[in-house]
Image (cartoon, rainbow, N blue to C red; front, side):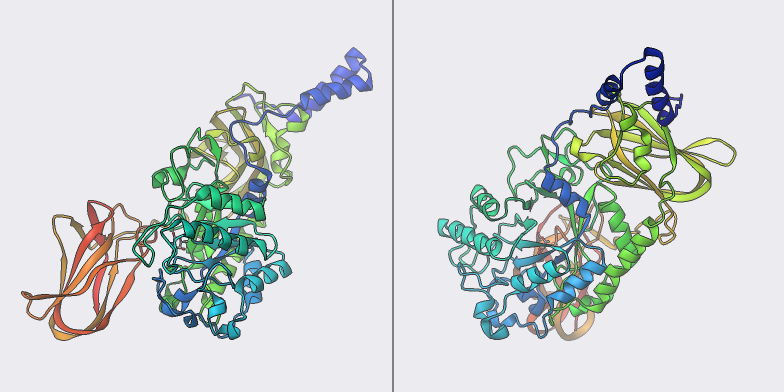
Length: 605
Ligand code: FUL
């Protein structure tokens, strides 16, 4: 491993020596070069060409839009009047323009969320835009958006929720057939759909029943209309959920997953989704879905909580930079347009990414390696900017180093590596060394997986040579890119998120009480779990009030904090009418852990 030879020159010398000493014919030289050039066999499960194209998209826009935009709910209960959906000035070209400016490659729209309302005139449903007075019942969001995407060179995708809290047939076989027709209508009429997003959520419908989803039927229908579509669900088959909604793929992230015995909605545990399975039997890469604001749907009250460019940049590093695709939600507002705060944030993110990646300090730089498979697979392929040329070694080699010789001392803090995924994901551990001004080699990182793209964050380093050591690999390593960047935007090292759980409560303590000090009219309350912590959250609860702290009245009974496990953010609950009281008691009924955190429990007056 320590003998570094310059393969570029060595291989050419080798070819010339054969030519001169053995006086071989041109044809036999070509044979020699050709035989050296045999590519490694693919290892394990490999992506389809559609999955490769999908992965190269890197960042896409998610748009949550529907009745919830107008009611400020996260999960509508299906009883919303169709007329509630009434964007005053919908302009999908504005969404597309901003997506394009933000460097997104596609847009996925919530064509139907759990409330059942369809943003297109779906003949299989009676709860659609056609039943609303928006544009006199003639509006069609899918039509407008698919056309805008085409105009701006973006791909178009749809989220169609099988959970339907409106359809009276939900919970019966009839619904599976209706849902098949719904897919046919959404997928068969608006041109090419690159991704079909299936939420695995399976709650109760309007009649209290749950549906047994017919996944094979649904998948067949998707492929019938869109044979090239990537199907998202928590377990694929096209791509998988990353296991959280905060925008973070595993530091170890395999694109392979074992799905036997699982189905959408009944997936492996969250850590497995986050990291994949090391020897997983199927290629199901992770997609990281996260919202630019706390909730998935637009709420004016969250305008001040839109993520900063720095936060989004960290999310980009932890998704695209960790072998995942970033699906960033930018929800249209009540006008039917992306609001300026969100637009500024996502366009700012792109400007930040561009400012970092536009200068690749390793581009075209001289490289050498401990070994290479021949001229065609020389280490110089790592810095040539060509996706389809790569450095690889002999079939039996599992450890190898490649060095990039910078012309002078260079300052950097991001190292980007790519494995050539058409041949599978192979590397399971690697380290990075950098040579300092005194000629000393220092270890600056030790990591596990690479995959399609891995960006390693290191403290600012001044160096004239950088060495990647592949420490272990399932088959000979195959790398097609190496880049070095200097990020001057994020503090170095990145700020740790500080979590300060004010109240952590064990389940034996049954409730939490607020004493307002004196009686007053209270119109609702706020609850926030402790974000990014090991503490769980309250899922369902009762809310009781009292005037004297002894006699209690239930104001809310067995209600649910919507989507709180996946997205543990602050929730505001308004009472049906203001209540005169001094004390408020939050009684958890169901939590997702033995302990749960409360970072906020406040009365709204
Ligand atoms: C979740 C849904 O329940 C949320 O409302 C949101 O659509 C998110 C992207 O997926 O599972």
